[in-house]
Length: 169
Image: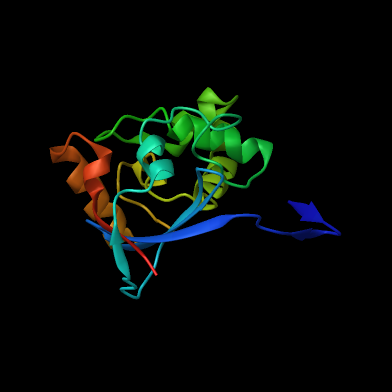
């Protein structure tokens, strides 16, 4: 909720998980994932089952009303993030290809900026975007993590298996 220019979270649930690429913090509100970010510390508390919002988010193909993915972003960012949701597990796409699908290859830099601003790592698969030369390229969470995620996805069939355990502090 926004009031007097400030954002207030009404009912934020925070979870932590171990993934094949490191530990993450998951922020959910109203049964929707708002943020998923890698963290450096292993913050573990009480083991829990996979959170419902996260379980449902693995199959999302579009952001918006009714989605279990609810990041904050601009209209253009949502267009880019929706395009990322269409990239199948184990496959990659170039920034230019996404830009073309949104109106023109000249938008590739803007696409790159939107990809880099993705607040829901893994579930909105920004790691599947590569430069036109096919190299790994940059990744907000580090090139090593990006390579790890891409390598894991090539040999596994279900994104839910990226997560090894869940915890609540």
